Length: 515
Image 1 (cartoon, rainbow, N blue to C red):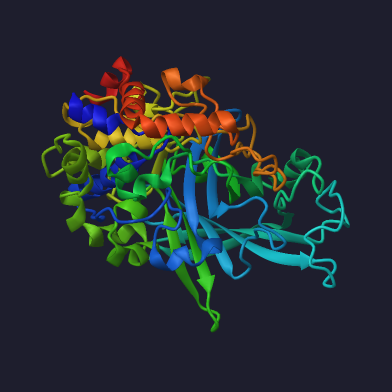
Image 2: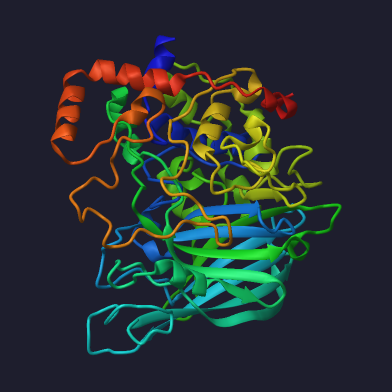
């Protein structure tokens, strides 16, 4: 119990154990499936700055992909893909734009053969009204066509149909759709919700589209990379993505458009970014499907290769998956015994889909989200998804509310092979509520909201599990006293965090699919 308690001191972050866990979990799965991935190495959030080349190209860096049956329109599927991580909201005067020399692509595999059947492509253009000012906006902005919004972007959508990875047709779905701007601040954009609403566009064929800035929906404590929370879990308790924004592309598509048939409703979904070079050729520089794979599963030598690859070639990364490093790291630091290898238990979760849930017939193991579009959404989603008996959640697709790190941590530590556990990182939800309608992502934090009043916006302690929930941290005298007391009694604080983190949360419903 001592070792588990030590492991449990993860506070409110998707941290050390958890972050690495998801990666190893994906890795192990790839391994058993004959689709290798890689060893954990340094990185950051889901795909935030996960590879050497892409970390220097944030406009092209795809951070997360979500795919779920739309809760308010269950005859449709919504895909949310995010780019350009760690946007400081007040980071002007050159705020955050989509690249104009990029192709932002959403890929659909309708039959499980690891090859694209459909591809939705988004390309962007810049527009500036006045070149003789440095300002993003020259006054209060009340609409997307407001003369005071000096800088704007528009985008086109193309639909490419493919056979055996060859394009057989291209169709312009929409053009010159408006992009929601960066949320400069309350003075500049007093009603940002109105701007968001105007950027939600109906597209012919029953589709909806959105592109623009949003709150980053991923939640975790990135200090995992400081030797697994300092090596002794002394660094815990911060959702370090809180307060940062991303650029979001969201697309809602009728299920019948992407399904192979009603009898075969499972689709594979992932996203990529291609960049145009000086000769006019296009190179894939980012790829993302399942969360956390490239950042904490692939070793540095394979990260850029993975970003440039396609799912049908995932067998190239096999070796490092059959013997994943993550469980060994956890065992070495926190004394939780690693499950026996090879990790065949993880194949269904991360590579092929779970049998009788989201595994298409004759599936070829490959890394992408797999969604059974015939599974209806639930009124009250459970954050642990399928592990808690909620088959509409991860790993059946990925909803914004799914706690993929807790799910991954429990599975990588043997949940599927008899080592029942309730491990988690105590970061159970995003700091902002998600919307009830498309595009569902929360509004971006405004530039005027961050640190303007001297309060901590990314490091308060509210939301810690159990008895810690009454603590409110801010940069005032009380907080200084709290921090001082904590630093003087680290052991007590860690015990409290460990106990709350380890609080038993059994989920009998999971037996229905674990067998």
